[in-house]
Image (tube, rainbow, N blue to C red; front, side, top):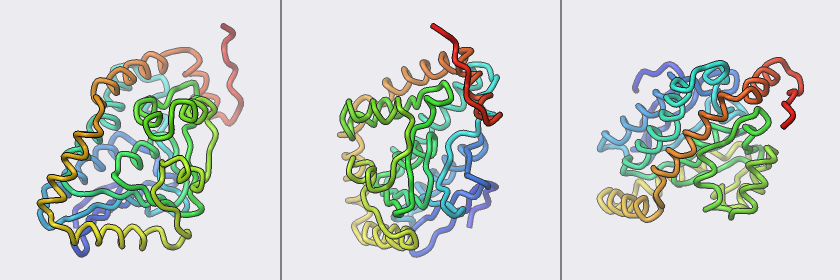
Length: 260
């Protein structure tokens, strides 16, 4: 078992389980993002690992997204480094993983938590799981999801989800194609393990080469697109409204947006 501070990494029956362990809501610190990337790379390098599961060790909380202290009143070069780790380094690690990955979403997934989930090849959610892109409520944008979400659900439905900031249940996420399976709450890990064992039973060579072909076919110029939205996020994060939105959230009040 590998040693991490904010997650648990364990390999059982050729399945690597990466379980988030940062109470109370698994908010992503820069250290935690780095640990997730390192855990993916560790699984990629282990020939005994045939599939990977991302899960949460906190009941009803998958991942709340970025720790807001990473953004509030931070310079643009710091914010760029945060997004590079989450949007680009995690994507690169997943891209090169060489074996299938499954997100077992047991509860709330928001913002950066959505990023972690959809970076996986398959998303299995409990009936109690909820999803959402709340960044707009804070005066920010869910940048990475501008790139991938319209390709999954269509342009108009993506715009509604991204710019309303509303949360939605697992059943709707499945109907939109974001989630692969919805299972009873106590069955999300067992369902993920069953699917992982199914993947693990296949030829590792064929899975590695086939997954690489699948990733290339579906990349759709991701890298250039995501670099553009990272730049946009950094610009927006430096605005007065973004600072006001983040402070208002921390203070538990409604933001006072500037008049245009």
